Length: 507
Image 1: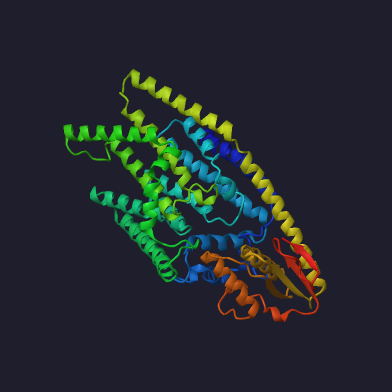
Image 2: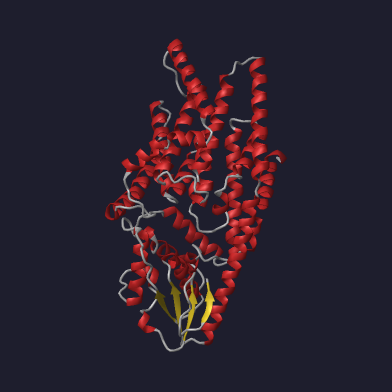
């Protein structure tokens, strides 16, 4: 019993060590305005409002938005109903997700490696730079995949279909790059059908996952066919992306230090061919070397898929590096496991295995010491302080608006990058029952060439002109002509304050 509890204690303490600074944070400007939008002026999501709130997001706009994340918004709205605007509860939930994810990862690794190796490997993974972005904000959809993907893998290893289905549904519906799990599900189901061990419940589970996947893919394909670009504004040309990836192949191998791992996989392939020649066709279920090569191939395909999805812009050292930057060390661990399996099962092989594990542990401990966890701790503290400053600014605007309910609040900006910050403040104010007229005072940028920038600027202009038709983002904003003589300005970035409206806040 105590032995089962120890891993939870270890990861609970380690998780708090990493992100404990989050617990003093408030709701922030970026992403968190969705929470205010869901809560509305009554500050809650009731049972009656739950489904309509989900359908008010992209979930209710099938085929008209470049993303389609049903599980992400279902869980986000559910969390909003539970935690409301209590930022501490939101960050505690992220902490719990992290602890569960580390425990699941440790359990998966423990199926193949000694416990101490599994612990240290988890500690090593947490030194990868993208965690600072993923774990210090509430908005990233990858957070749900953080627990869903290891749950899926654990379920696959132990043939627990409720884990497979739950992990799959959450992951694939949280972020489109997790669709790489789909071919894995098909191969897994196909293998079980081929070996005649699949049950009716498993067939139903497979059909459910396939239908769910096609529903999501259909929504994304329909939307992207209309726009010709992905959610990041990048042109969709898979042939160009594959060509770019092919030109990067050597860089990927060398920059991620995969040379030794590839050599081990080649040796394993030769061993497998020799065994098949001597003994005939082998069942991969019984052949350890074959199993390792299958896993290595799947991990390799998953890595390549992320490079295609992000147009080879990896690593970015932010949340978009999840899960691909975890897959490289995982691939190396598969190579280590295969190397040990290739050793002779005699005393010499046992001694070599001990040496390999010792070198592996020494290498990971050295990297942990060099990298440390300071970045994630500092970022958590900075994010907490930034959200506190944002809250203080909001309170100042709220107090002024309540004292002067007839005045207009003018949002001043000269950069289209202020799009989300402007929307954010507007939503937070409406959620706090501030009913003052809101208008934009946007100065056009010169030389904008990217599609995303041009689109956002046109939406700014449409709002000022009062020609917004279906743009939900600016539903609370009135045309610039509605500005009253009594007004106050909220300034963004490098923009100069409004010439006639006193500035009360600057972001």
